[in-house]
Image (cartoon, rainbow, N blue to C red; front, top):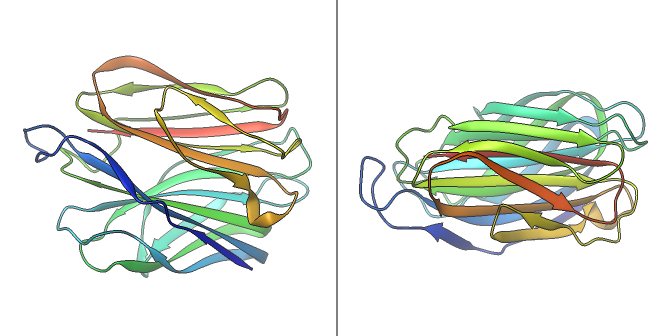
Length: 233
């Protein structure tokens, strides 16, 4: 089963990576798949408007009963993306693994994204963002948190004018919603694949001033929660 959501929108100030107003970040869309296997394939997922300096950022979540799986690799259009971080949560029965990966993709408006895990998952989600005008395609900072009770909070350094993204999951009470603090725009908030496996939400913000560190957190009705976050400049 595939579920595709497209909610385009960008934040930031126009300008090149070496000066001007800073990078532009845009949310492109989300796709969910049911995958009773170790490989999640998001076929022809939208990746936005082509640009020579377009960084495609993919926030990926996977769930299955039992222990969380390790994300082994991510490809975008057949090319290997860099996995910047991943976070598992063993506090609940759904075994979530959240991750952030990216790759410069200059051409095309869609690409098949493939996530390979150490063993089979049941559901997976892919949230695509694009960033242009960066000084560096390497994140300024990445961080994560996983809690069995309470709400997750993490900190990341920001170099102005910077951009930030985060992916959150809860696997106990999937009724939602999730409320982000530290990111101004929530882009997606729904139950994964329309099932009761987990609830997932993603958010972003551009035009951030230098801050060491910036706190990004989520409040919700869930008790088994995980968050991953990254910033670029």
